[in-house]
Length: 513
Image 1 (cartoon, rainbow, N blue to C red):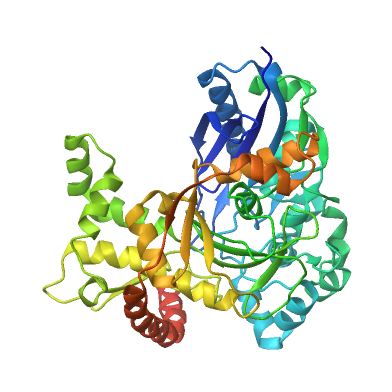
Image 2 (tube, rainbow, N blue to C red):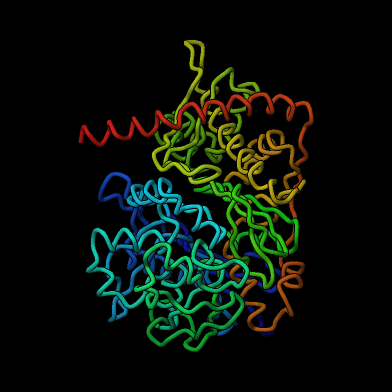
């Protein structure tokens, strides 16, 4: 009997995954490969573009082989990928230079200048987006104009990660509405903002920006070259796809006004769907992959990445115990966290290991433990990491709720896999957390865009209803929420008291290099 599958590619910051879905949204098979974040200078963050495409190819082949999938049964492909940053392609279709990641901080001086002159406010009025150091070509191009204009002269396009992977698959250059709307478009028209181009001083380079298409349009077909490398069938349709935050919201089933999603992954991505562009200086606006829908967003620079760092540096014993017991290390982490009380015995953790971009923009912010005493245990520190991310999540929710209220949140990312962390998030924020089945929401969102593009489902609402199911719901404990409210007030005071200190600390660091 003939079967039909959809392939979603999710090109993240540290891993590129390829996932095969059936038409009910079930994960059939997947493959993935890690990619590096390169740091050639302090504060810089880059990707080798060929490495990213190579990881996509490896993942596709592994997903097909692992599920024993006949490539002819893959009816459509689409991509979800990390947003912001800039991926330059030269006139021969090759990378002009390493991709500038969304985590890059080289343009901090330009952001400072824009803030000092008030230009940042005019840019917000034009785009609805609060700029940070690597928001996209809008800030990356001004840096290259000042420091390395040769890259611009040699380039054919300034794209986003999604565009690069799609270009390698199809040979076609375009971008999607959600990616372009990261500080480049007028949210009312969903088209490039000519006013912004003038304000940022990049009007002369606007020819580098790809044409914008809807996420559920067909961008092209798999080329012969891409077919040979990936194992896909030449001519397989490829839908435009979307920025991974929009794609993950879609893959979690959020398509309608008032539906919210949080992705506690490498970054803390917090979004709420609205049916009109509601511009407010407390948050940023972007287009959703769904037509006539927008995303109110407030996105922390890091989230579960804080746990990854803590594990690597301080949790050798827990890792060894997990291996000895034959369980996931995260099972042991959760047990350790539960040994510490709510509030981590007075220890606070500020989760800013790569600076911060929302609800405040400060690339020089740094992670810190505060409140340590000689009685503090590692369990207190580990729980403080969980709670620090939860407090940062609440900080972002309060910014978003300046424009829209919500009571329930679809939760994804690595943090959602921990029932302990999910409960801390629910208690700290006072929101009900709904965890959808599966784990690859970004790739599922890509598959949904492919399904709509191919006419398998009439629209995104119909597709999400068919392809997304909620697996677990965790309600907040009101008494715990009250306790976290007191901790949150102190957390905000700590953040505000450190703003000037972070800048001074960073300047001292630079002076000593």
